[in-house]
Image (cartoon, rainbow, N blue to C red; front, side, top):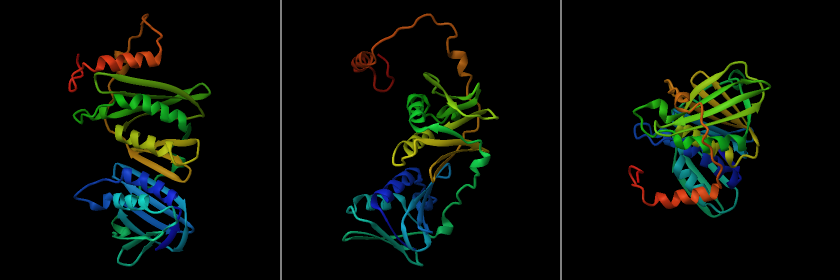
Length: 289
C-alpha cells in the first residue's frame, strides 16, 4: 500500500477514529485504525465493538492495500508532522512508514484480516431522517449531562431517543436521567417516518456522535436511522454506528409536574453567576450545602 494525503484531512480522519478505538488489553487490534487505499481514496475505520466509525477521504493512491495501525500513535505522529502532504507506505510484513517533510516514522502494523468486520447496514432500510447538525448538537449538549455514570442501572447510562410523526413533521425527543435529575428536550424536524422510534443510546456514544458531526466535515445535515440494535448516522461519506442499550427506560413523565403555576424568567448570566458563587460551599463529593 502506498498513498499521499493532505495532512489536515488525514489528521481529522484519524482524530475521529482514534476517539472510538478501544484500549482492550485482550484484543490489541481494537486499539488500531484500519487504513485502506483504493480508487483515489483512503478509508479510515475504527471500532470498540460497541461503536464504529468509518470515513472516506481523497488521496493520491499509488498502490492499493490495507493495514491496521495503532490509532493513538499514528494520530500523534501525523499531528506533529510538518504542514506537508503525508506519505504512507506498508509492505507485506505490515511494516508501516509515515513520512512528512524530512520526518520519517516506522511502525509495526497488523494484518487487515485481524480487524473486526465493519457492521453491514443498509441505510435505506434504517428509516433515515435528516437532521440539522447545529440542532442535533444543541439537543445532545442540553440533555446528555443528566445521564448516569453508574453501570448498576444500564438504562440510565444512556439517553432515550424517541421519534414519531407529528403532523407534517417528526417530533424528536431526547431524555436522560440519573435518578436525581432529569433533562428532556423536544424538537420537530421536517420529514416523514412511518414507524415510531423508542431506543436507548449509550451516553458515550452520544458524546462521540456530537464530536463526529460538529467538526471537520462541512455538511450542515446528517441522516439518522435505527435498525436492529444499531443506531446509524451518515454525514457525507462518513458513517457512525453504535449499539443500543437493551432494557426499559423509567417512566420519566410521572416525575414531571403536570400542573405547575410557578414560573420565573431570569437573566441566564445572572442566574449562572449566582449558582457559581453558592456552589463554592458545596461538598465536592455529595454536592450538598
